[in-house]
Length: 575
Image (cartoon, rainbow, N blue to C red; front, side, top):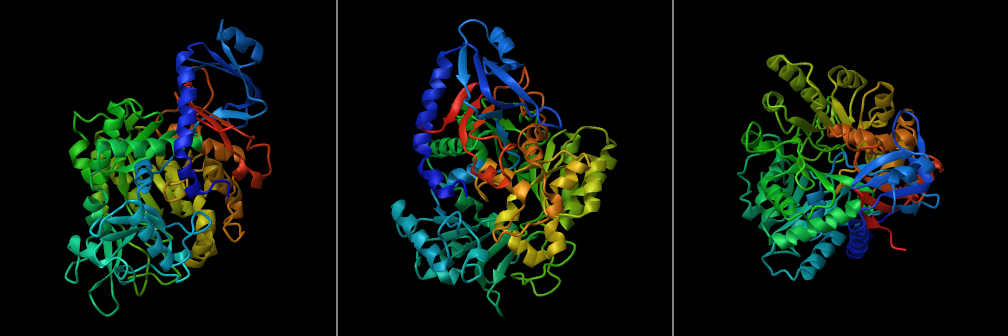
């Protein structure tokens, strides 16, 4: 793997120092800049197009074309930047992730298993949580939080339990968040503080897993059931610390070539932090923010809440719904059962929805009437059916089937070919997650069977049908590594080397479109971002090699050399 997630964290400070110096240099010099002598890939059109030179001035691209004309357009005193054969293309646009969740992870224990981390068993998890307690200098009553454990990668092949944690943490409340983000494990102290006991009923759209033969909680809470811990997960810390975490998270994104990032499930606590960062002008890449559907009734239709406009790099883009869970966690809502044992379920196990059809219908009608874009998390085909029905109901009730809504179906993983036809008919917009092919492809083959697993994130079929789509990492579920993501869309290899859906492989150019111009389209920003064209923002990334001119397996090893946001360097590789 090209980058190790943990190692990236260790280098944030040095990265930020190097980019700050470059940024100051660009700010002091208002002359035009000419990039030349490299593969300048414009991302304009259905086939690769290259330019000889590109000119940037005042944060925008003012010319793309031949070098001689570029120097004329640049005017007197312009700066020449020799790419030395490297590749220049538009900055990467994040189709879906959680930048504030990643920021929170900087003060939590990373419980990733190889190749991203070192967690192999439940004992390793406990040791990592003990190390976190020491690192934070926490007392015996402080909350301790870990993230990204994956039961399928543990030797025990099961979720940890409260009992596993209680011996080492008899007085500290401890929470372990699953890699999917759709479930967590709490120890007995944490369960007690949250008021969860044998008498607690499962909430609609959630499950509290019980000890066999009893109603006593075992520790695992799925989907909506975990929301009771939100006040504890989002306990306030000084705003300066929050902003420092967010700065480090931005730098991590920028180090991977991202100029437009995403926060696609913002609760009020995180919105306050993002608003503060924007007010203090501490955002140096764009952040597309989706408030959670749970507060839709308070902000959709509220004249004092601004949608679709950037304020110092922060934009409230739309509402985020979460219709179902995760396929690797076996909570994604399917029309046909999982083929392996599902925790908390004894027969006909198809996962479950977090919302019922009426709730989906009401949310879509509310947003469509107020012209607010909708993003909906749907991993399983049954949840996708619910969204299609909700869309049909909303356009019938509003009487408006022509507005360009760009309703985004996030993940769209375990889907059927007839659903792609509905996407095309209704102009629904899938944002895929091909990293699943690598990280959980082998598990999907076992849990779903070859036919369903092979059609996960069907990007080739989508391109062939003329449907616009994006691809994403869902960071911090998987690392914000855009070149590795590109590789998974082209190779579709599992960890064991199997190919998950040979017929759904796409070309490297199609993969880059999903990360650039299609990403701009997802956010209604195709006129200002996503390709190298005069008049667009100078959001750029320089790569060590051209992904279109190397062997497929070399794509994931390409390095980001520099990231430029509106003409200013926000990351530069250390020489």
